[in-house]
Length: 277
Image (cartoon, rainbow, N blue to C red; front, side, top):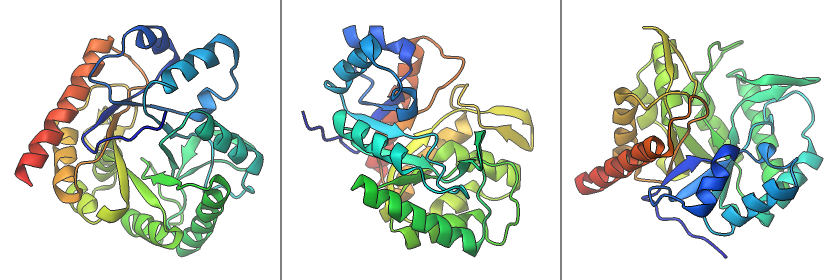
């Protein structure tokens, strides 16, 4: 089955423990799912069959973890081919990855910030184009949260916009990451959001975070969405238009009903943004 997804859609990150309940009764609040392909590629048997049963019924996005687009290591073309096969097998609508890296002569087990330099722009843009050529489909890059900016020459905003332009790729706007970075690095989240190119935005992420200090937020994906992030999402819709929006919740998982409450709130904000435009 070939899926199409309305712009007014709310999705949920799929966890393995959710599979049994979702196969028997998917809540109407969930319009699509998103998975990290790395969490499913190694598995066969019943888990793979159950996942296939769900992907045959509902739209899916993929949000990768280990492409490591900014790594000094060569691109792992064998891994990219595995991703390509997975996307095709499960009719995945969109594939996104982090504008960061997680390997350098070995796996780093974290998402590291790419230096905001002109040299890095050219390097990363070339690698994005190579990945898109192999996949024969767009690679959507996500703005990431970061806690240090080594060797910085450009602003984060200028770096992202330069990569998008040179790579001619699309953007996944993580609204929570904008808010977290704005607090941690002392810039205006609203101005940053408004300066992103509307025409390149494919979809949005929204999540919660942990406040360690009034000037230090940690991007955890382990809490409910706070009011300032909701307000920034509303601004994103007003500035750039309503797009499918994914609720990321990776830790401290509440009951499914509570997750669906957040999805219902996303749809409420989408509806209000449409009325106001």
